[in-house]
Length: 136
Image (cartoon, rainbow, N blue to C red):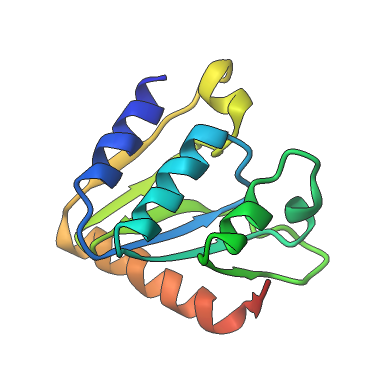
């Protein structure tokens, strides 16, 4: 729960953008927080694995319906990244999967940093992937 609370706090403080690159999202509370970012005027973009969008508990379709821009990989391999960039100033990354199981049961980790060099590398990687991926 500590990771989920950290993410909630970071998203509440966000002002302009939230870019997220994750394997899957099945946690309804995290989805609501992301949708709230969009409702509050943030530019929100998500890159995720195409196969995981079809999972029974996937929240991706709901987020697309809420107007969030989503792209997927459309390959035989997994898009298995787990990172996000908030306001181009904070990068978050770690083992944390954005799933109900991860928030309730798994041993997970999440690192948040505002170190410019690290944030820039994650931002550059997100932009590169965004250009390569396909619309959902």
